Amino acid sequence: MTRTKKPSQKGPKSNGGALRSRVIGQRPILRFVIILLVLLGAFNYLYYVAFVKEGHLQPYLAAVAEATGAVLRLFGTEARVHGTSVSSSRFALGVDNGCDALQAVAFFVFAVIASPLRASLLMRIGSIVLGSVLLLVINVIRIVSLYYVGAYWPSALDTMHIDVWQTIFIFLPILLWLFWVWWVLRLTKKTGDVNI
Image (tube, rainbow, N blue to C red):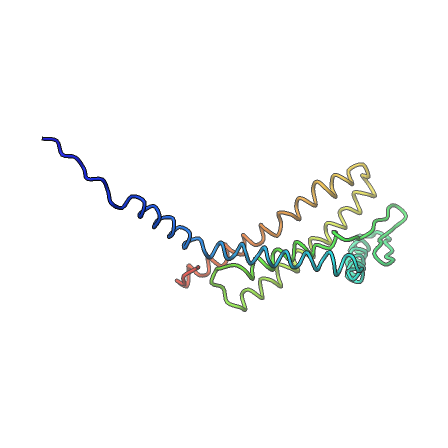
């Protein structure tokens, strides 16, 4: 005698339940993505409309140029700074919009704010300050390196500026945030807290 299995009554229901639990399980990630996109959208609107278009970034860009000139002088280059321009007898460059690292900083800051990980307010603020300072320092290193490339290897300037450094500044805040996530997960694992 052959026994036949009764068709399962759970067919569509179990698929629907699995899908629902998967969506519910993804809600913290979905919320993270939505909050991050909204914050970045608002920031970019303000950045381009209120700051770049109206010229409100000029004092900040001048400060970046001053920092670049100070580092160049530290390395023995007779660099002069005038507004947002850094020059010497060998080469001159301008610190313009897009050379400010503010979008990279904004991504890192908003990713930390929007993250569903259990991290204390103090941990988030400390991480935001340290990460932002690190990105701004690396940005000055970028401009200093571009000065030296322009002065000693001008044919490679466009490649270094666009292909190398712009790519680095696209991925750098993401990598910094991923490092922050790893660090928070490691700390919460030690203390036994639930992460999400």
